[in-house]
Image 1 (tube, rainbow, N blue to C red):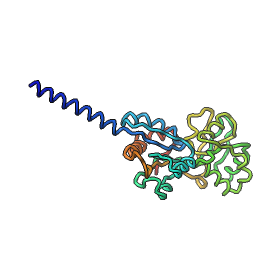
Image 2: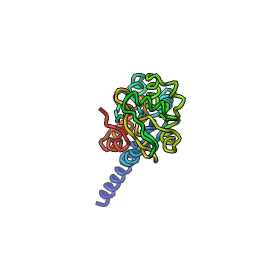
Image 3: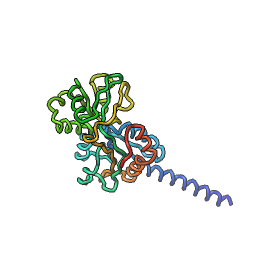
Image 4: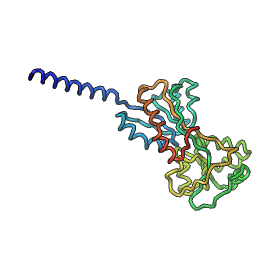
Length: 254
């Protein structure tokens, strides 16, 4: 009987050790490239993902062109989250087509320093006049909304007057400029502006000249941790995650 008990005990210990080993094998380091506009949202969701899975996320944040340049240079990553469609990377076989995950979208709008006079930009002509009257303004620069605004002022025929007044920098810089009163207004999406003091969001620019920035994620076609990467993408697209995005100014995907 004692021999049987010892055998059972040994078997249970062996199973426990094997289970622990399997758990450790499943835990992975997931390398994630995240656009600056999405970083605050992803940071809120990372801890619960790590607790639930045992995986560890190593996150690199930058503007989209910098992240794409890292991808093109062959820098290893497992998941990328951008403030535009990863479809362009899929077409170049840099992102797995089956992994494309739409997280949400945001339109382009206007924010001012708290308490400043509110400009009227309810029509295209009034929007143009607002930009011409501003002494200075900020955009996300090489971010998705900043690049759109740069193309928009070209299309409206006011680039020569407006572009010299635009101040931009790295992720979050437009919110910093406005919060400190260094610019009159910001033209961008809402997510990067939330959480900063002294900022008042006035709303979206006219529909006929607006453009929605779509936030998407995808798995590297050369991911070292594909299963963990797909698990992260599922987590980022969960109803709980969508609720977080809503509080951060991101509208649900269409």
